Length: 479
Image 1 (spheres, rainbow, N blue to C red):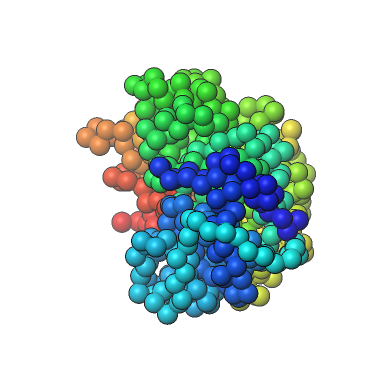
Image 2 (image 1 turned 60 degrees about the vertical axis):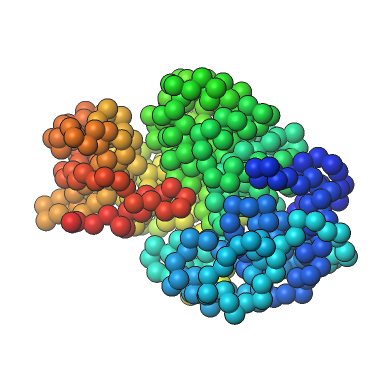
């Protein structure tokens, strides 16, 4: 269980990592990461300046080889949040590329420049499955970010469950341009291929041209977030090379937020390829996925992964037993994929669990086949209006089907009559001629039900999003 990267022991000349023109074979990665692992061995904890570079990948592998918990740092984090993370996690050093300029907040830490060459020395004996591997900080939407302590067992269990669901092998070449400070880009997007013995091709920064180039040049898998797939969908009509590249990919995977149904349909219509969605969190890594050998699942995040138990729980605390695609409950999960604790936050850790079930805070429904459809977060996406429980996600998908809507977010606001009213935040396809609020309300009522129509419509130039492309609904407020 502690051997996360079996392919490093073979030290082959197959490419392991490629960032632009820079690349390392498994033999070179084993040498560079092994040499760094010896240097940092015995450290209590290290930070990783997680820029989209080859050195970030080498640094993460080195820390895992050394058995040293690593704290990935988002290079775009503001001063206050960075200071909080450092004070909370107390790393003794920061790993960075030699050319990285680090903020003053890191001045008190020993800087260790990550090498891309070297010779491995003796490494620690096998580590226990519950030994901390990474401490990944949550987004902190309801307070300061919390550090989720992810054990080695969780990393291995999630990546191996995805191997099963996606038929992921050493022959796969993964293309992506995701940030490397988070679960999606770092654990799935870098550690995942390395655990399989395959290849990572990181774009440095996402671009439609980069995706087309790398998939056409042997890439078999693409990871992205909805904003990336939206840009790909927008470009497909006028870009036959992109269309051919996506058609030739073995697997297209979207995560970190729900992919709107109209983008699913546009990509599949143009390429014949479906986009697979999966569902996970910082604290749980991966919970569910549409299977590569399963039925199409547009709008669904699939079924629980191997080794993951999942249930829906109603407001009364009872398990939801209806697999009717309508009854909403909070997703709770348990399994070896879970984090062990929030660092230094025993009270928060205790509150996060219902017995040994982790309370995700996500609301969902399940259909007759057991597939899960996320309808939103309990805090921001479950709207109680006129006695109905309404998920924001399905209204957003309906709004995005209107030709006058480019982007949409739905929230609830207090209403003296309804309890909460449905509010739509819209980026119009044509800012000079936006659709009217009445038109959009009628459009939703016709597609879903009258009680789900937005009672208020507000137009914006852009929706607030974080680095992973998620809409920050707490930033949406009455003007």
